[in-house]
Image (cartoon, rainbow, N blue to C red; front, side, top):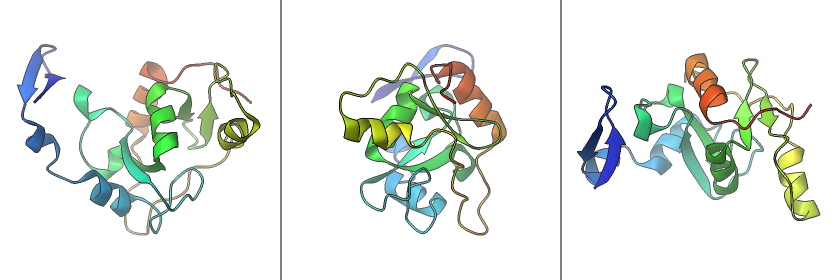
Length: 143
């Protein structure tokens, strides 16, 4: 069981099996580009990331999802990575790497275009991108 904010603003409890009604791996693979991460083309350790968090009434569908490697998923959820309205990758200026490899893994993404979804799938909804930018991303972005 976990706690979830309801549309009315209160806290409700929903069983964990309900949240898992669509497996993360399946949802992410459906929305990725031939089983590659949307940011860097990584083909291993992929996660399905909600742009507008499911726990805060984000829909559980492909227009609210990104296929990311586990590290980029964590950074996206922490607000280190974000998306611009033009669907390019934003990197927070508040990010500080502790190694050259980590720095390259994140900083090299700044300004790169988001990979397109597989043919026939809808892109991420702009409203979800805007909400992530306003509520999660740690502005300002690097240029």
